[in-house]
Image 1 (spheres, rainbow, N blue to C red):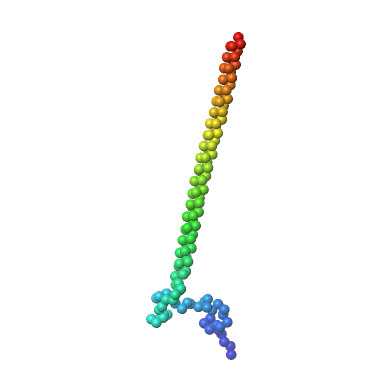
Image 2 (image 1 turned 90 degrees about the horizontal axis):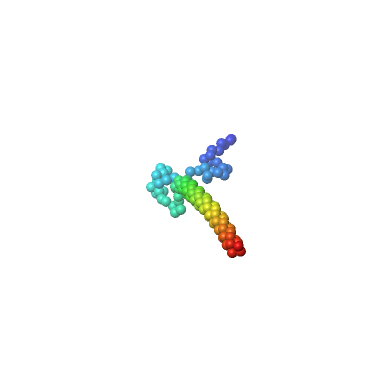
Length: 121
């Protein structure tokens, strides 16, 4: 005599509870009668939908955060570029002033030399 075990009565199946349907799927579950319609503390029938929504929300937050970081980097690069341009401009102005000061000293020295030459003669 041979028995063929079906999935319904298979006692050797370690995944039986994983494959089995939960006791209640929703408030409108036709398997439940009036006496069995109750909600247990900690029961979350919308856990999959909530988890999916949370993942989408996390993805959106991450995208927004990356966008903010990218914008901040662009602003920082623009500020750095403006600083560098201004620094170059100030350096050039300082060089021009130094050259003008050197030229003034040469002119003063030349005038003093001419004055001294005029006094000697």
